[in-house]
Length: 569
Image (cartoon, rainbow, N blue to C red; front, top):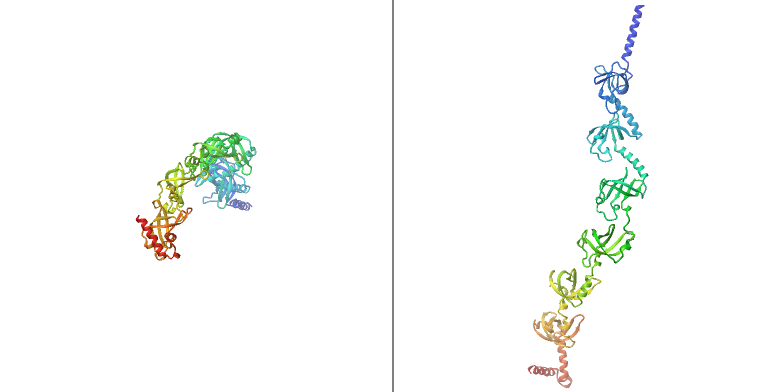
């Protein structure tokens, strides 16, 4: 009986021992389990998770933001890596348990688009490492703040909210942004601040930044743009001329864009508009002193008073200087006298003129150089239609091709002149309206047609042969041989056999009869044949006719004999 009882007890002990050996086999490796701290030994914490043996975890795995060191008896969640290692101990990890817990929590918050709390714990290439309560995330450098941050020290190891941009659990990759949280918060604040602002009200602000086109003014948590054109009624070259960073300024809210939350500000709107009643202050035709503020391709802007500028178009700058850049006539900051030409208050424009304050030099020239006056000047330019000669300060007169020489063609006479030559000319006409001075060079010598005393048709003249051609001969006659004419081959003689140009030589003297005078064309036609026929007719009238019995040879012979007798006498 005793033996039987002993045997049964041994079987029960073995069963309990076998059950104990399988205890914890329902625990799965790679899962998070709960355990009880049994002891804290130096830098290790002993934890019982219900297995045959206890596991050990380094104390540093319980350190970090928001963590406290556990005490014996505390329950903690740990990650079961292995149920038993080579030493027979359970392999546990607090970090991996926290990571798994964090991933579950972060995935829920990521799906709900909620911000998560974390702390920047280290620096890596291109950004920073963020501890999200057990899970490690990457914070790109561009996502730290709204504006670039030079020193991240004050943000290190400080718990703050982050937005999860990307999650990839299989790869263990999380990307977060602090900037997104700040922008969202800022947008909410801006919306609230914008709601408290009204167009037209006056506010005080601090200049935060200055650009080429204006300045940004902080209105107490929200920035507004003060454009350079709204800083002053007068022209502003650069915003730094009016404001500086850190300066407190009083501005008026001009416009609020509810959609973009952009605010336009103005300073000049708080001052009286100098354009009010400007037409009465600057009547058309009145002259004023002004200062050149800006020079453009088309003219110059002149400030009449602070905030009131007018434009002097390049065409209204000088009577004589045409088609040149305004900068060659006036310079910036120069004081000038201008005349008001037109005022448009609605468009805020004033047209000014400088040349109108000076007397028209063309009028002065017309008074001092009436038609017929001889002037002397330099050849400024030579064109295909004439010469331009400087006859006064910035005034040029033109000698047309037809007014260069009486006898030669204009193209031929033009070849005698070069740019820079000093020449004399006679004033023919001055057109003040068209700003033109007509000159003549040939008029200095007088008109040969007039100076010759006036040639008449039927008059006999003695000509000198100047050139022999196949078609006839060129001759000159009159005082000094100033008249030119051409005797055609058919007009060289009454006798066809003598109508040969080659029987004449240059320098020969011949008598000819003027057959036509065309003063308009400045042409005098002469003919030897006409003279011979006239002489024949006169001889017949004096010495008889062929009907009276005398032959033509006898009549001409008698006439020639009488001429020879007169010549001898």
